[in-house]
Amino acid sequence: MNKITSFTVDHDKITPGIYISRIDGNITTFDLRTRTPNAGDYMDDLTMHSVEHMMATFLRNSEIKDSVIYFGPMGCQTGFYLLTRDISPEKVLETVKKCLKMTVEHDGEMFGAVRKECGNYKNLSLDAAKTECARYLSALENKENDFKYEE
Image (cartoon, rainbow, N blue to C red; front, side, top):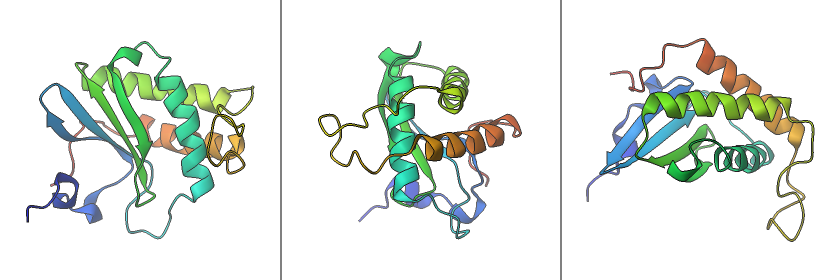
């Protein structure tokens, strides 16, 4: 059986950043790596769920909203996948940074934090989302982002 693309990347060489995981026609899968894999520092469920709610909402309301296909957490608890259509990586990075900043600066309610809108609505924390997004934004701003994994 063939390995899926994400299993062909050496996870011991991945650091926090943004990477192009794969391109399928006009759809690009971005690896938004917020944590270093296999380093023992993983997001807990509360953090992953909270970031997902905030970032998915901001991305789907951003200037690239028509290009966003999916945003969600990685099972390994070290980042998120963002799937887009027909948009440059540079524009995605710019928008991700804006949405991270919007999350950090958000002064309202947690998006989707009511029973009617979420299947686990009590497992959300705006503070957890803000902390993770600030951490990731700092990593993106302090790194040369060429969208390529280390060889």
